[in-house]
Image (cartoon, rainbow, N blue to C red):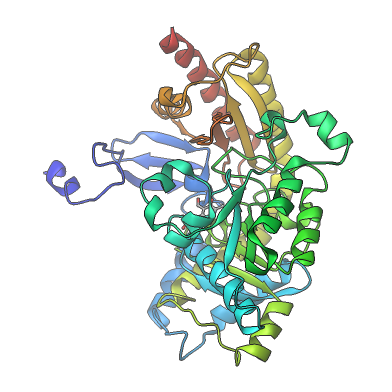
Length: 452
Ligand code: PLP
């Protein structure tokens, strides 16, 4: 009977069956057989408050009973105002207006379109090309996929992708430009920066509409923070060539990296911040963008105040109620403080694992967004071949043992590092961190036996 039910679901991998989850509580998920999984990656770095938070569920139910759908082309709601105000106040000074979507891909799609419309209506009609970065993921819709650099996901759709440009993002541990970290940083001459300017000039600044980047690279490289000064220089270049700077905080937003937005740590004011995942702590499909006053004023002056865009579910009251309730929990439970307490503890525990297992070549990240690079042999810096699916295999073993992590493979030649992201719910405890690290430790031991 079960088999038949399952047959109706179009999974991304049609050859796989997944455990059926019946409920969750805190950092744990439980399947139909009663097996418990420690959610060490908050699902897709989304369930940032863990599972089963009753106040969020209650807020959603109450809103659904009052008014489940309100078309935001005709009406507004108080929950919409309240959530927008909360988010606007968290963002850097001049980013105030909040636009809602249902997912991060749509948020980035909206930002790319907004940049284009802003330029066009301000009398810069040629500006349309977006510069993205190879080790970046911005979503799976055609525009966001075109801006991102996930080669595996792009490959099948190459003929459909937009003609956007890409540079490498900084990865000092294994520099895609072949530079040595200390030398490069000491000379304050980062090739990853000079390459952005070279690309702008090659494309013609009059053609470049936007530059998009994750402040800390997430799924494409495993929680890699930028070197000091990188984003200040990016900001300067965007100012010099009138390019809209979009910072994608879909994964990093709402405390994940130890500040409300990671943008606070990179010390710049972007033109647009996109967000998703943590905004509703995964309780409802909700995402969006926060827009700089400069762009809003441009739209008011040059576009009759109209953004030529819109989604049926933009600002959906039930999703927005989930977001607002999540904001209350972040605040009430002092979640940010917990991130700054548990993040360093998690890193210390993972560094202990690094001493023990020669497969770990790097531990990096910020707050509770931590990446672990996996290599075949740390001493000789020998990478796994991507076909070995090392990260996926390790995560499979960990799942058997009762913890789930977020595996990934870099898809660019020369930097094909495998990695795990460790990103538990932001209210995780020390004991739960110990439990997940101990499971990972055992998973490495089994992994080693299997490799033999
Ligand atoms: N941007 C970043 C940085 C992401 O990590 C993701 C999803 O993983 C997205 C955008 C796309 O978001 P969604 O899957 O909600 O469309």
